[in-house]
Image (cartoon, rainbow, N blue to C red; front, side, top):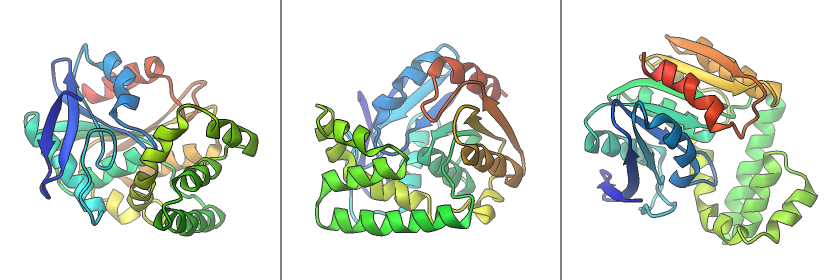
Length: 259
């Protein structure tokens, strides 16, 4: 990350801006840093000034306890102020939940696009989310970072063989470094259900996206976002899963963000 701004509580937030034009801030999801969204930034930088950043507690950004979701909203406020005073937001997965919270809080946001925010769409999913939260809190409180990563991977649906293979990967140490931030993503999602009252306060246009090759409940979550915000639309991207391809996503985002 080449640049830095300071959030309201004094936490340094590392970021990079590429391209020229209206500012778009890319908000990453769990177990990721700004580098995760860099390929999408490259696709969009021909038309927009694209900001990628390390959310607090990740990469080159700082982390000032105690954590609160409001601090992450303040991080976005600092980025917006540093890069011209107004921006659109794109958030993927739990980063989408953060983008929606930021827009509902009244930040100077023009438009918001989100991809597959993993809201719990039934009682069973909400119960599973609550169980995951309890086990995650226990693992992190005991500094069992590897176990926390395993919990997350299992929660996302990966099989035990895949998880064992990931443990042997040279990337595993980096995942363990990010493990404490899993609690941040869990907090951003609240009780896991779509926050209907909060979504009703998002006054700017919202595009809720999902892939048509993934689970139906993620598409239903996206449709719920689109139905609940005052000015929402929904679109499914062909042959895409939760790991959406930047080259497929970018043209759709560009059309929406250009207004």
